[in-house]
Length: 312
View 1 (cartoon, rainbow, N blue to C red):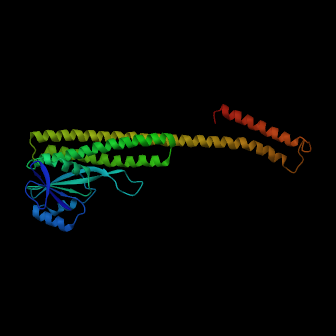
View 2: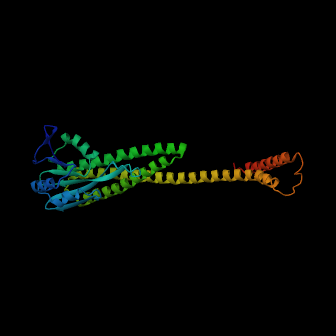
């Protein structure tokens, strides 16, 4: 689906056909006919539009026929039905800068473009570079918000895991770890993209725009550092819980072994007195009580020894 937005008198209005100085937004579902038609109308290489559909597209920029093409990654919630998949993934936002319009293509609905649309009435379509940088800003803000939410979830699952040691909490932490892997990879790519844009001046930025881009690079580096920190903390936490679970298992096995040893002595005495051979005091009226007393004495002695060694 193709959306055309225009800034008129401080308001964002949607129009039915492309004009100069508008924002064109493509959202699912996509049709090949729409790509071809839009490419012909706005003189956009069809390869740029088709590349936008690749969810694994890496952050990059390209120039062809005076049309600039930029790909940047943004986070979004994962709607997968698989319980082992990551909570969040990253998807590409493709920005195409034509002669008169700015075109954005999204393979999924994402919060960065929605935030940009909500503030579009404050933008100046004639300042295309600043419009693109504002999209970058919304992407960085999205990463920050998702990272804070991830950290909050991590704390919740860790607290629950301290109390229950359930497999479900461990699985949730693993899903968060997968999300952080996506974030670290995407943020590293975004940071390299922005640094290359600043170094090559691909967009022809003025001094004010270059300063704004430099601030975005710093914010992206901060988000990347946060993601790396959360990843390291989560990795250490999972390793620590794996050791704790292993130690708990060893303690349980030690207790079970001790109980088996304690029980085996009464069983040994009972087995001896149940043999069909001549045994001392077998005909005594107190033979039963003797075996019981011997069994209890052996059990008490072994139990005292194990308690002294702190096996219980």
